[in-house]
Image (cartoon, rainbow, N blue to C red; front, side, top):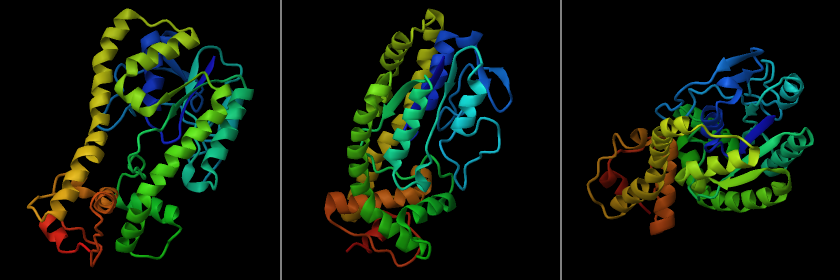
Length: 313
């Protein structure tokens, strides 16, 4: 059986994939790697500092893009489907569309889902429904990566970092509202083709309930001893993701409030020393919650709330 786990923003699919392998001891604890044409052992605990990426997920892309690594066997979805069509066992994979390079994110994903469905793939989807102003936090490891993403998103290759930051802060709140709305429409359209859909807030708050439902729908049996070992790992993963909620719901609003009130607050050490994506969130929250614009004179972002207060408009 081939099983695809999909998520428009890549939220949690890797951990769900690993959990199914681990909890049910699928393929006697092994997963198939098309790039190596062999079965490899599934790790006992995939959780690292930021995510579940020590689990070697199979992550084929729908269409080739400028930065996608597509040279290895199975890197493209069509290639992957051809390679695995006669492989016996349960093969879980995490197909995706690179949204940076397509004009119609939802249409491309819908085409991908239909192709998988037509090839008898069982599809599980995680629907984004938490209205945090995400941009490319997960994909971007440095401000340089973030600026590459932002310039593509804004279709602006010439402006300074300061200007790019301002433009993004104007758009990010409205962008996520539209994104949530269109994501719901997309999931309604594909619902006849999928086994199950979980909202990302449901998956984040109660992974065990979601996993139980998936296993029931797919006919998988959870090993009780594995479940006992899995629970603390799931809690560890949840704590990592709770830091995201803490930033968007508590820290960023508190920083914006301190700036408006001209209160002393040292921002160094918070949210990776306030990288550019976090700067954009703070500026957006200043407009959303306080009706204030932060107009900085240079690319620098002072890590002091009282200094930032001077540049409010």
